[in-house]
Amino acid sequence: MTVKKPDRRFALGTAGVCALAMVFFEYYPLRFSADEVLSGIIKMIITRGLGTVMFTVLLAYLGYHIHSFRRLGRSLVFCLPPLAVVVNNLPILALITGAAQVTRPVSYVLLFALQCLLIGTFEETAFRGAVMLIMLERRRSSTKQIFWVVVASSAVFGGIHLLNLFAGAGFGATIQQVGYSFLIGGMCAAVVLRTRNVWLAALLHGIYDFCGFLLPTLGEGSWWDTPTIIFTVLLALAVAAYVIVSLARLRPEDVEPIFAKKEN
Image (tube, rainbow, N blue to C red; front, side, top):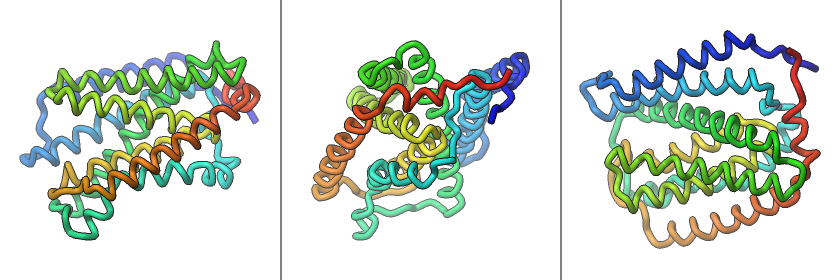
């Protein structure tokens, strides 16, 4: 079954408008609420929503097949270990014991969940969609080439977070973010290449951000206790091995359907 690509002028025009609007809302000092936290959430919803539209249109124009739901059952099974990682990013033990709690209203939590989902869709369509697949266009003739493209695209994703230094983030916190962004990028890359579905990777990414930033953004307390840290490290090592093995088993013919040409 072939899918008609969007017209070139429509695709580039839509992407251009979204990019300009995204820059405007990102840097123009608009306030959407007297509450600074709520205003920031709304701003992120708008900008990351525009970014999602921009890259979704561009990917449709480039003709990549990364929206498949034909093998949904098998894809969901593959995603179970990554799902364990992203859900574990929520400090469940601290919430159960009362060491940490959400202090903002449910409406804030729902808007924050939407923000995280749109961050996931924006970053996955941009980095696992455009960046990684453009790199794979010329380098996918062997498993080794595919593996190193995943590493390189994940490094780009991690490295882009160095820009947080210019936003006032501390050096240590920024380097930590670069590191775990690289690891999450590699995991999401494996999901996209194995499932041929960027939306599953976007959902995992959104859940990861929601679980990891819910309490720092909308709560208070202490959540990094020793048992949580030990379990997180062990789980991360196990899933990292799972991802590496899955990429090592990935053959060029497994990813070739992503690049099947669409009808002009």
